[in-house]
Amino acid sequence: MINLEDIEWRKYERYDTLGDGFSFKTPFVDGHLWFSIRDIGRIVGVESYSKLNKVEKTVLDSVDGSESITLGNFQSVRYYNLPTACAIMSQLGKTDEQFVLWAQAQNGEIPFGQYEDYVQQLKDADQEYIDNCHFTFLDKLWYIGEGLEGYGRLIGGCDLMMWYWLFFIIPIVVVLALPLLAEYVLVALVLFFLLFFIWYRLRFPKKRRMAILIHYGHPVMDQGWRGVFLYFFLPMVLSIPWMFLVFYVFHKL
Image 1 (cartoon, helix red, strand yellow):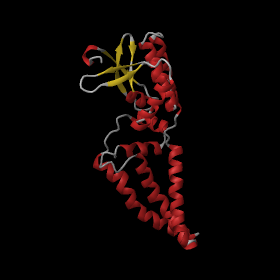
Image 2 (cartoon, helix red, strand yellow; image 1 turned 90 degrees about the vertical axis):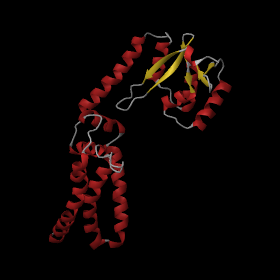
Image 3 (cartoon, rainbow, N blue to C red; image 1 turned 60 degrees about the horizontal axis):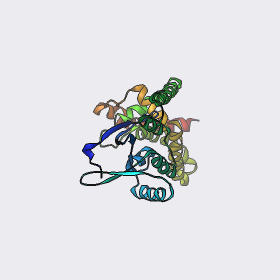
Image 4 (cartoon, rainbow, N blue to C red; image 1 turned 90 degrees about the horizontal axis):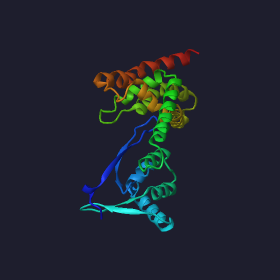
């Protein structure tokens, strides 16, 4: 077992395309990097220990020449070399190219500039995506909703969009459905909520949400109680005259 105090640690800082990157430190021993099963899982987005342990055992039983070292003082942790880490990632269904290039550069297998060029390409593609986005009031409204999330985490961008959908679209459904198909009002409401979530997923995929945060500023500014009133409670109040207006117009037609 190698003592933790006797080794060098290298920090991996992942650039996540229009997202929140993460970082972790991994040991550099005998001219090579070594990776724990937990770090390998983080790289490919797998947090389940049972799944990681199952894949770990499968790979170690099937991969020839897999190498590992054990580090620790009070609790030993097994770390694997890059080929074994790649085999584990492959079994988990995703081999992260950015991570592999970084590890190869750290191990001296490729020039470090090759890794830097790859990351720069990701950044350029992100900037091109942002430059081609046409941001509208809906994007700004979603962003404002994210600024309300601190209040008991009951409000966010999606919640605020649904709030507006509820208090401006539902009155139309109720007014139109009650006189015609009263027994189908509940079905109509369920259908409209389903349509909302389909529309939301299409209108605000993760990549666009991240672009909105970058465009308007991140971290998101706290909207305060004034923002809660203007953007959350005010639509609820305005929905009452709005419903009467829809009812009036409908019966005048």
